[in-house]
Amino acid sequence: STARAFSPASVGNIGIGFDLLGHALSGAGDSVEVRVVDAPGVRIESIEGSDRPLPKAAEENTAGAALLSMLAALGSEQGLTLRIEKGIPFGSGMGGSAASAVAAVVAANALLAEPLQVEALYHHALEGESVASGSRHGDNVAPMLLGGVAMAVGERAPLKLDVPPLLYCAHVHPHCAIETRHARAALAGHYELGEFIAQSGHLALVLTGLARADRALIAAGLDDVLIEPRRARLIPGFAEVKQAALDAGALGASISGAGPSVFAWCWGENDARRAADAMRSAFAGAGLESDLLVGPV
Ligand code: HSE
Picture 1 (cartoon, helix red, strand yellow):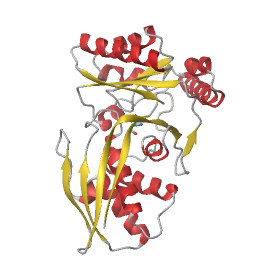
Picture 2 (cartoon, rainbow, N blue to C red):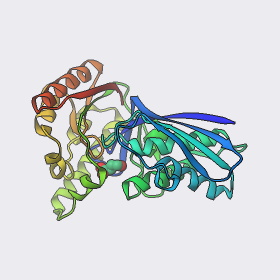
Picture 3 (cartoon, rainbow, N blue to C red):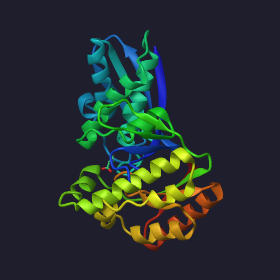
Picture 4 (tube, helix red, strand yellow):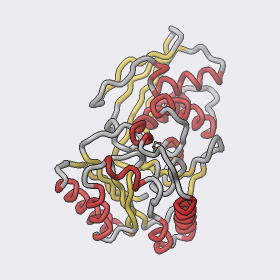
């Protein structure tokens, strides 16, 4: 038997919620087809749509490693063959490595006589994702599994948050790649207590704003003072792109995941379209072509 699943891309993290907070992004994603076979072991038959060679050894591939984790937990020797279709560009800041892991576990789960709960799928997808990123953080896996905005804290079950219906995301992916490992290396060094307090306050404002559907609180909080300043230089034109979004009326804007994509949160679809166009023009000014996604958060 065979099953196929799709995982959306994501913004993970959302600036102020470093490694903690992400949201699903409609319009891009990865698909994985899982087939039950006689020969034991997890085998990757094909990887299509990737602009980079990705590892085909199961234990080095995020989808393969996620299924190895799932089979080990089930005590199963079942043979599985995977076909992976990448729709998320490599090193884009859209959660590509997590999406393949999520699609793989969701497809495999559909083949189980007794499907696992979402918490177990989260654990196995995280095992898979960590082979690519080198650390465990569920800010992409959580929203991909739950939809909308989700919060991932340590090994706890991920939490889905309420989102005001008018909250829209304008997402712009410039045609260049940043490896998450490099973007994380830029964060080494000293952090002031005051920076940490400001960032915690901003995260608290955004979480409260989401819960109360209060756009002013969201706008006040959506300002990453800790991570963004240390990574901005990795993204050509970042300051201009962010300013273009704010000038177009966005509530706030920051780096999508580890970059180089940039996202802006806006109130209503019209503002989001205006912000996305302005951000795209700003990237063009920095010599980069880009792709847009606009949709509800
Ligand atoms: N939160 C990660 C980072 C991205 O910004 O480094 C991948 O989860």
